[in-house]
Length: 133
Image 1 (tube, rainbow, N blue to C red):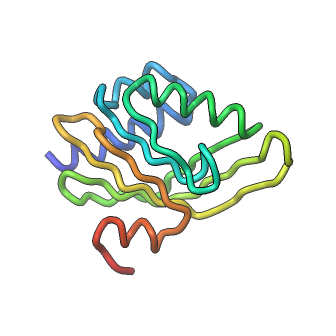
Image 2 (cartoon, rainbow, N blue to C red):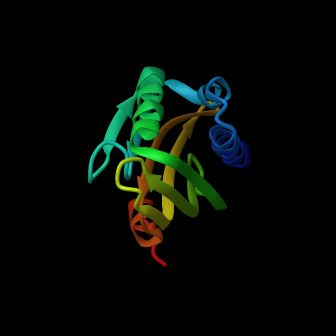
């Protein structure tokens, strides 16, 4: 089952990268909870459900001219998947560029993502997953 969880998480990231909103939502449980690392203020925000994800997408578009999440590694942790990669963005008003490592701890239940927590360092994501470097 856990390899299926990795594939569900990978599919969600791929749909997001294509900006396929309906495809992205198809990987998410209706009660999905997204803890954003950068959208929604300096410390991020929590977005709940499919409507919350749509709000996150709108907030992302409002905050950034370009926001790309580029996953490079998926680690199977059973009902959770740890994802490492990079986040690249350019602030819409400031023009500031972000190029940062990023990590996500995602929880999967019954083939759907139920929670995703974003972090701006691999160490923070590892710690949230209860692991060490």
